Image 1 (cartoon, rainbow, N blue to C red):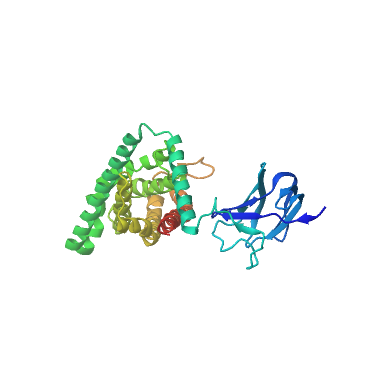
Image 2: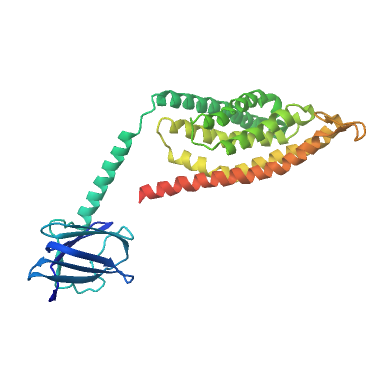
Length: 359
């Protein structure tokens, strides 16, 4: 029996190739994709020259996936092949000269711009379909209202601290360093006790922030504020208190309004940049200031024996709390690494997603 070549018609989309083989009542259909990216077709059927064996080969312009979907009808054989990369091909075959048996399938044919519009329409329909299947949270408005008020209160609290310290710095100069605690401690106590909610919110599913980085920051600050500054009067008149409070408040007066506006789906580009960039110099400086405060408190704890751990008489009188703080110093810089890595990932994810939207 003579082996003949059937008429083949093709069309494409960004991710797929469509082939239509004019072969009616096809039987023994054998379609294979070879390692050299060549498609081999063989079948028995009724084509342009009657009932015969028909074969053809096509070497594609670019790699395609090995999965081939084919459907035989009484009139033709339809073949669908997925491209390895979703992009528009300038032609079907590797060779520039088109095979004589190959032609465009005008029933499916679209140019690149039309195919792009079709793809966007499908993506929009899929997005609407997904959104329609997702249940709307009946308490979403209440959750956003709570988060908005929380961030607003924290913003106002840290703004008061920042403005108060800045004004006193301009008026009193370096003298303002030594009474910072007595002028701003009450408001700082309030803000840091409120900040405990930032550890609870991820556990309740109210925010997407991870629990562990939030716990590290809140717990670390509370150790400095309540244990180092709050319990030692000797530390309250030191200049390091000014630098710790000032660095904390500088970071927060940009962080809290960013989250506050996010609750009402609003964004200010400058505020977003400050939120994701200002921590790079300020966060390590804040940890250094906290470390200085811990180091300055060590001899005071040794002398006062405050929070010392009682020991049996055989081992000595007590174990100074300063040893716990020395261990805390090591953990502090480990926490710096964990939180710095977390914040860097947040920044990279934020600006990578924004770049994709622009493109």
